[in-house]
Length: 64
Image (cartoon, rainbow, N blue to C red; front, top):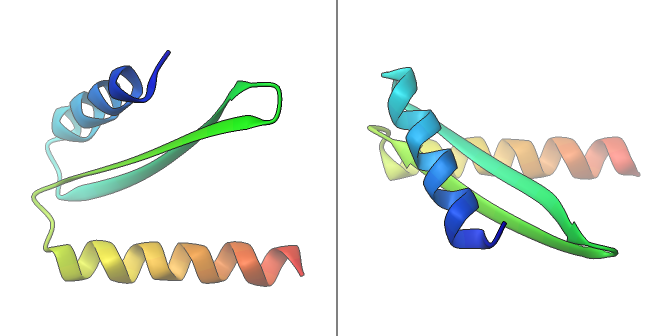
């Protein structure tokens, strides 16, 4: 799947939940090639940024 197809599926998923939410989704497209998309629904941009910042910090702190 290409990034547009994955993004559409992610957007359908977050809209289908019927909740204010966001998602960041990463996948391996081919050997050592990765794609990443994000989508949010009915959430203030500031809340999405705060959540993504928390997730990034969590990943970095666990990988060190």
